[in-house]
Length: 369
Image 1: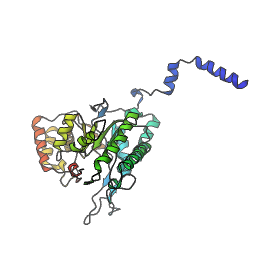
Image 2: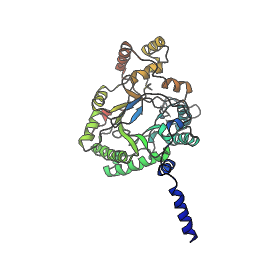
Image 3: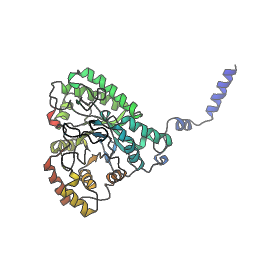
Image 4: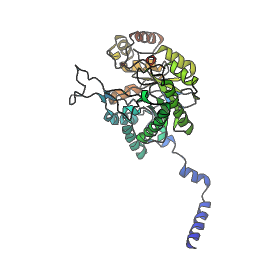
């Protein structure tokens, strides 16, 4: 009888509480005004499904790949090192979020997601940020790269059936959410169309199997948008022809003053697929930041060369993904909207694309079938 009395009394008390109040207690999120960090006013790019993607993201692919047979790595204490350096992510992302960045770009293969998750957890716990304040892009479906990647973050794609790919991608998706410590990502991308330079006859079937998983995660809300990376127009056309239901919302490709994929951009522009530019400041044999044309424009406008190079891409409607652990450079990389480049300056910078100087990754057109 005592238990029954307690239950009745509890129900009576609940009847005095408005249902809307209960909903507010359990389901609602604080307003953006509750965030303690002053968020930046970076413009957004509207994806085809209405998702707003901030046009500047903090990159997190920290690595040192300078080691060759004749040259040591860039780490004096470890001259033999060749690979990713996720420990540099802590400072970079912490600084970026502190100064108002709202978009973070990462990938399973970068091994930087746990670090990002730790920084986000601290911001969420302190109330400085809410999940809704941060836009997260991640990537999966990366083939193995001998000497650089590890099994687990990459897949032996050429040896896998489409069914095995689907199962593995489901696992990778879940792992990404666990490492980041979030319930969903804002964009999930397929990192490459195949193992680099692969011409395996089953590549198209594997891509479709992976894409079907992403479509399912989009429907379940575990990704707000889905897309691809390093895909040519032929890969996307093949994907849709083979039975994809959702046209990619985004294609992340290498792009800079020195590097552009004109046909891919033209195709994506026509189809409403928005572009993200990785390595927008280059990492090739020649430093575009020391280019006389870039330096001249920067001097005339009182800007840093990096601002000129990034603004060039912004005005072509790319989202840009610069990466740095320097507080000064992070601030410069965010300050891209207080000036514009005129038509003459854009034409001069566009002409530099004839150098075709990238960071050394394979062409999307080399991965066929």
